[in-house]
Length: 354
Ligand code: SAH
Ligand code: SF4
Image 1 (cartoon, rainbow, N blue to C red):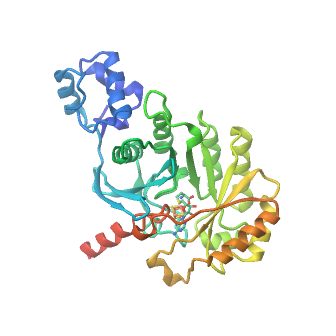
Image 2: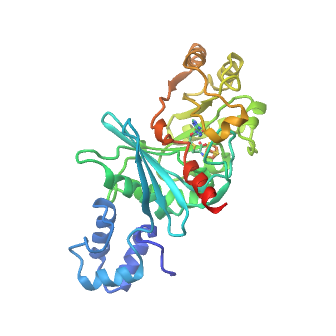
Image 3: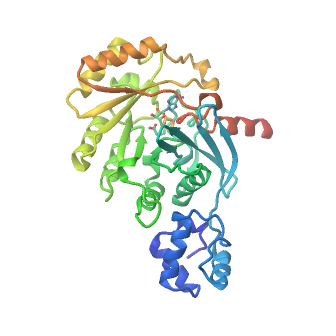
């Protein structure tokens, strides 16, 4: 095979084949895997139980990791945003969100995003490329190394930059590796993937062996309004909700519908009424996310609703029999909130290159 960009690109079998090809034994492949995923080794020097010859041979074959942290910004509430530099010079972000006993990591799945939701920073410049499985896994490895003693990553959300359903080839092997009991060993119930709604790919995701949580970014239950918010969508609300419902049927995992609320656009009483009509019979939860303003997008006339409007919308849905949660804003002072990624790096780069 062509040399991989890092060891984290390899599944167990390929790692084994290469360790053996380079003169190692099968148990040493397991040792390498433990160094990579259990101990989070970032170089070969630390892999003390491997012979120097094997370490040298592996180092000539591929680096341990292909990404590195370019910058880290800590917000006042403890949220930390990491900007990772990829081997080809691209950048992606991930966000560590401590919350009581929990520590959630929000990871990216693509460089940019092709979907172009009108309120989202990640889609402003389109998509550059998919992340590889190794690049997705390495976001977790980097984040884990930064946690203070006694803290572990308890939850993973694929809610950073990109549309995960358009990169299942990178995402599924990455999640399987994160879930693997011999490695990072993160329970499937602690992993949530968020999509803007691609029914075919959601069916493929449902066919995976492992049952992750699925979140669907609905935003509006009326097709015309949803199309204004997610202009590239080719699927009706009905199709998307049906795919979410099939996911529940196959996996037994209740789906969360996310609704980014924008004042006067999709937070009106009639918007809540349509949502009740569409969702009331489904076992699901609606997560309301008051829009985090993106400076570069406010010229579109978008506004974050006052909390009283959010409360009214939530109360309307609840009266209609729907479970509702409201997301608090995190890391706002560093633009670190999930779904608001990369804009700074992009803007800074544009300034440098223009
Ligand atoms: N592309 C996927 C996952 C990444 S976005 C998706 O759209 O679901 C993760 C979540 O952040 C989505 O629900 C998205 O609607 C939301 N989001 C994006 N930009 C936001 C913003 N500026 N404020 C609040 N939520 C935002
Ligand atoms: Fe892409 Fe999700 Fe942002 Fe929409 S909200 S542009 S799908 S990252």
